[in-house]
Structure formats: C-alpha cells, structure tokens
Image (cartoon, rainbow, N blue to C red; front, side, top):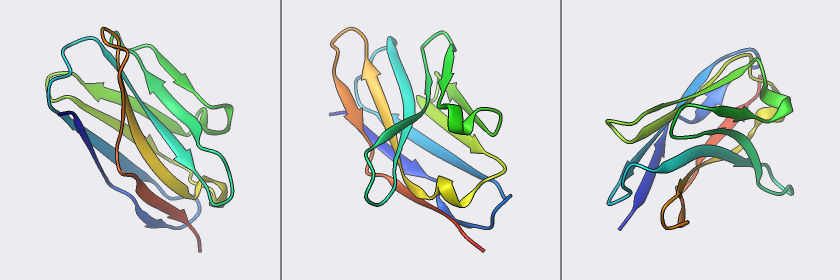
Length: 117
C-alpha cells in the first residue's frame, strides 16, 4: 500500500518562506514522478510543480522564480521550497506521485499553507 505523508505547512507572513516535505512509503519501484498541487477555497486543484525521475522540473507560471521542487530518490521524498510567499499562495498543498510502470496515481492528505500578516 502506497502512502504519501506531507509536512511543513503553516502560517507565514508575506515575503516569508516555507519548505514542504513529502515522504512516500510502500512499493513504488524506481520509475515515478512526483509533484505538488494546491487547492485554494472555491478554486480547482492546480499544479504547482512537478519533477520527473531524471530531475526535469515543471512549474506553474505563478510560482516560477519563487518555488523550487527537488527530490531524494534514495529516501523517496520530494520537497518544495517556497520563497517570497504571497497571500495568493494560501491553499492546501497536496503531494502527488505517479508510477510510470503501472500508471497509478497517489495523493497525500494535504498540508495547509496560509500567507497572511
């Protein structure tokens, strides 16, 4: 059974930083992509950043230059470093894992990020 557990959310002032972490457990093999999505109240879930097995990254335009996604394959973890946070970044952030061989997709339970003064 695959599980994703996020951590690192919280309340931060505009301009501040947070680092989200997501740890995967269970049988996922070596061929998987990981990413972060977010969902603000009243809005659809949207992609924030995505990282492929080889390290290729994709970012939403709204976070380019402010957020950095990285992964540790040995520990089956993915991170999201968020700098220069804005109130518009307030949302529940979800970790996502896509297994390339089985095409299965998994989600974490979500972690709240609130940017407010």
